Length: 407
Image 1 (cartoon, rainbow, N blue to C red):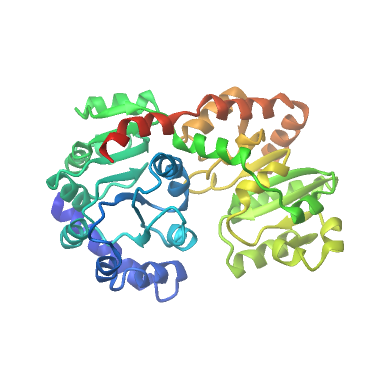
Image 2 (image 1 turned 45 degrees about the vertical axis):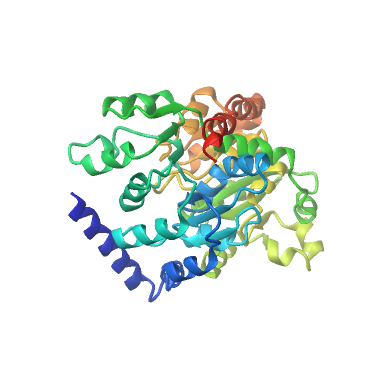
């Protein structure tokens, strides 16, 4: 099985190299790893024992961020190294103030893992939610370095629970402690004899609860809203936008804010063609008169969506016509009921909110309008959404209390 794993890593890297010829994200992935091990070795202070946080991408960073910031709050001198797998996380957070250093994660080969752990010699390692890398986990285990997985979520369909998943089960047994989101995950892991587990909940709830307390006003957004009812569509893809288009046309008394998941020129141009009565966020500063008149504001940058939700009455979250919905918790925290596509069953909070009538899943434009009208008529759905977030906070403190004695 290890041979197949190593072959998969090799083939994945080869695929990214080929894709990098035309794909900017793939090119950034390759470029960011050139000369990476020597760069890390020359950057680190050999007299420090760093706490290592690894995140797949930006979403996992936001999920693990409360734990990082909680540990730093209790120990401001704590040296921290962050690694990212994806360019979308690295490029946005490479200058994150609470980290001593931020790097890409070298590809998971035995040689890279051995060198990285030797150079970093971390005090502990904390991985968030999904990232499991065989050689890194093995080296941490061999060197008796505590390894924690936080906000873990497990489903019976995952490779850990298949007859051919022995290698991945071994990874779990190398983890010092796994903090899972729910009892179902705890039970699944118990069925494969993984006992170093406790239910802490999802740290993302702590993050979004904190965000609403510290949210900053965005004057341009306030000017666009102009006392109108606002519908916010966040992290959308073309499949989402096609059905949203009908809603925008049918309800001119509402204003719409569209924040696509990707903000490339081609994606923004497609949105401009689809939503004709639009203005972009980047142009709004020089066209204030147009800002008030337009029905649709297209967010053509990254990093403000979590604050934009404060202006909404309800939200649509994209991704549900693809691999799965994006983060719904940021909108829920501001008391916005949410709507999303059919691919949501892997997300515990989405399933529970649908059952509570704080969220609706839709498959087409007709169902979208029905959900829209339901939430207009049932304003208590917003309270359901807000209360759900508050009732699920507290995971960060549970994790910190467990791990801080190893720092």
